[in-house]
Picture 1: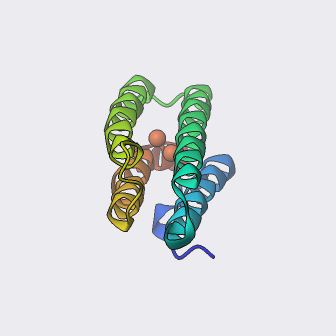
Picture 2: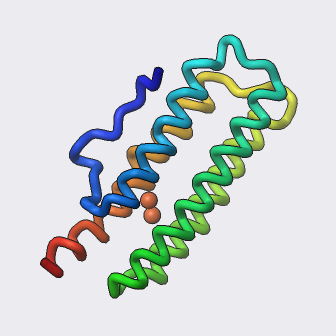
Length: 131
Ligand SMILES: [Fe+2]
Ligand SMILES: [Fe+2]
């Protein structure tokens, strides 16, 4: 059971993007809630699943933004690239042998909810102005 919530204030208003954000939040929440029982191998698999989901979401989101004529799409693509560098550095801490701590999961969740999704809000404004 996930204890991480994607609040209404973080909904973009694009069903596919919101669904993918929810999936990533669920994945992180589930991972964090199982930390105590997880072995090292499980942590590596969870990290790979999260990384893959996120990269796929980033690609998909850029396609959606470009098709919608979002003017900041190049800037947003750069933001995603930088975010992946930061996330890889965080994941590396868990993959280096010491395993994934609650601290690492909290850092990933905070980064996603306080940094990555809020940046997508610029696209929400774009969608609203198009209506
Ligand atoms: Fe996003
Ligand atoms: Fe994004």
